[in-house]
Image (cartoon, rainbow, N blue to C red; front, side, top):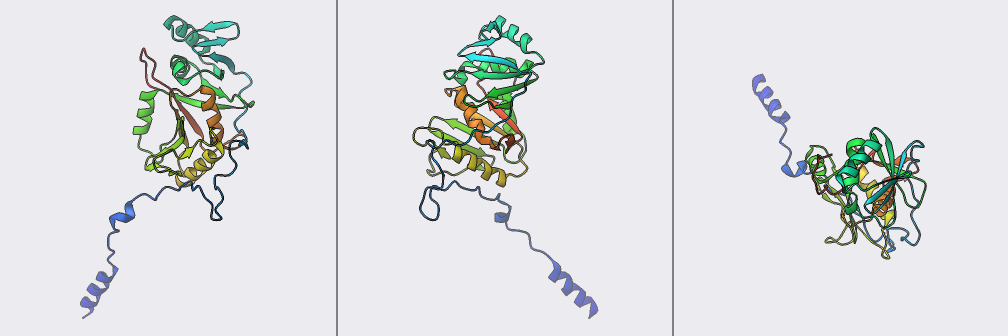
Length: 261
């Protein structure tokens, strides 16, 4: 009799396997367009500018003034599209902390050779904000380097896809939903970048992917570099307080090729 009781107890202690549904990742949060009271939940529009946050750039940084395909360092002028000029620039920035200061009309597509040289030779690269005395330390990756980063096994793999119609916030488990399922997560408002909502969306993603420490900004190659710098302000919740510790900027692979970053 006692043997039968032990068998019965053993049967009661068996645990059933969790259903496959329980193994699915938790759904992403969403950027609702309406608050419970019916008002716009995105907060102030671009006409009420979101505060600019960032970090104070290093005082000893070598300043690179970028205008289109030309780069000025002090009195020296470089054209990184020319291999011999790119080689001189690489030597000039070798082992240095550099601060990239783009003008308003320089597009990302014009900077591939510059950023490749900085990635390979500079000790650290900072990108200056065009409207405030702050800057952003960057890891530079070309398209191949970005694909290699995406292939790493790690939670999140968060990136901001910067497009003409807004920002798409993408993760390893999908896109952060925005007001339009077929549009970006953070559409433009009044024809301008909605940095306040972008900042809120990044905070939501940090809450969902608590262990993710890096984030890549992937602007369309027709984006002005200054606009990319403005977008990086949204990665900060306060002055000197990035939501993600490592910021990556993806740039076009140089036409002459090169190693991935």
